[in-house]
Amino acid sequence: MKAGKLVCLALAAVGLAACARDASPLEERLEAAMEGRLRQCEAKGASVAVVLPDGSLVTATAGVSHETVRMDPDMAFSVGSITKNMVAALALRLAEEGKLSLEDTVGKWLPPYAHVDGAITLRQLLSHTSGLYMFFENQKIWDDLIRDRERIFTPEEVLGYLKEPYFAPGTGFRYSNTNYLLAAMIIEKATGSTLAAEFRRRFWEPLGLNSARLPLEEPYPEHMAHVWGDNFEKNGVYRDLTFLPRVSHDSIGCPSVFMTARDLARWTHALFHGQILRGESLAEMEAFGGRGAYGLGLQRFPRLKAAGLRAWGH
Image (tube, rainbow, N blue to C red; front, side):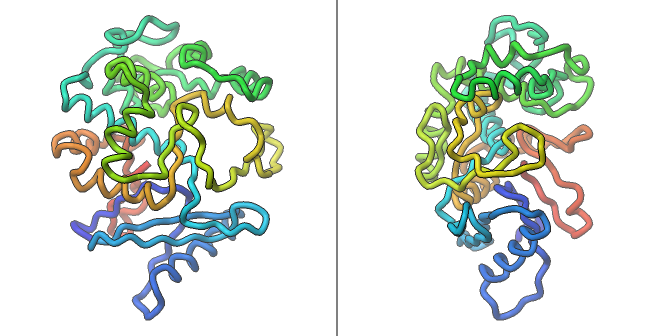
């Protein structure tokens, strides 16, 4: 692997043990490592895809999606906050095209909102250095979400759950979904389009990432890995939530893309091999700083340095 750099954007938390070379196929070794990790985590299933140095792609799955249905490589997952990586890449692409600047302020593009300093820059949003309150920390948004699971929250309604900022813009680092909610709003304002349409036109179609979807702007994937969780009840009981109404949850915060592990690996490979951004833009994304070792929609994982690897992802 060039320069000893491992780039990873993970769909599921899967530990891959370092293996000596042997005669078994890579897929078998991946699956064995994954099965062991699933048992440790008491997780249901996982899907992994790896792009090798020669450009070939290897996939492996372990566990089940639900009941006795085995996980398979064509199942799409909600990639959650990995979507921030894609939002940041889109913002950098638009900056390359002169449609906006990372130094643009929130106030240039959006109307005033309570507890949002209009002088915050797009760069500060993308790097989590704005100090903005994380609306998920307001219990009221969870109460309202559970009360009406079929309600679609507008971005403006979500911003209504903000409280006082944690610190002045540019004086600290704190991860907050509020940053990427506002960044997505700025992107839509600058393009006169939707995030889903811009992702599709600029990224998914040119790269052939056919599994990618952005609900609620697009339909949910038909072949989807089931979602397991505690239903926000914090009672320690995990169950299959797939067929519960999920509109309210999926309409709050930074939108979450759905895609297969295969397409996520292809996205990552394209991003770090110059198919998405110019070199100087990618260098800005990779300018890690602060306590979070965070760049622009991209994070460095220091713990793997002990193994002689540089691992970047989200």
